[in-house]
Length: 179
Figure 1 (cartoon, rainbow, N blue to C red):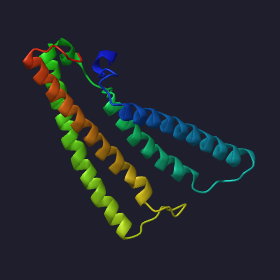
Figure 2 (figure 1 turned 180 degrees about the vertical axis):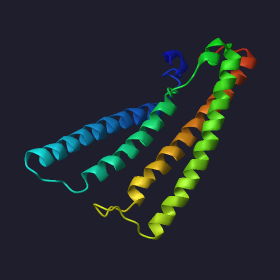
Figure 3 (figure 1 turned 60 degrees about the vertical axis):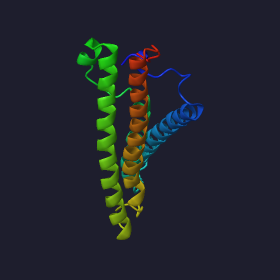
Figure 4 (figure 1 turned 45 degrees about the vertical axis):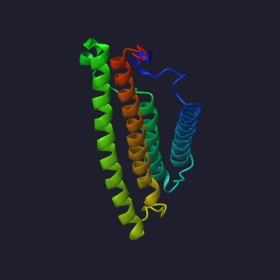
């Protein structure tokens, strides 16, 4: 996706830019930590014959968190993988309308997924379910789904507001559009 799809930095609140920087740093640190843990586990297993119990479990749970936090970043940047064949051939007004439709769908679907994830997490928390190797409360890894889906729904809802405002500005003839 080209950079013209992202909102101008002057329109983006400072707190949102800071949150995005923190998220990127967190993602990078998590990924480096996962690589280090995986290397440590491989060296331990094959060099000294020591198996670190729970390493694979931690890596799987960390990957879930990595994906869900990453989903927040790509949603905010409007950089989800997309088939933009039609969008590239639409005029400005239709392109913004399509963006609005996409953000409405993402908001609805992610809200539904967040609610279902919350219900599931409450159930497993109530019964005290823990992981097999480490005995970690399953509330921790499964909460990634709530954070990812609820956060994405919130970001997409804010993008809906921005798209509606942009359509209104286009109809008003102010010419201040992001595309």
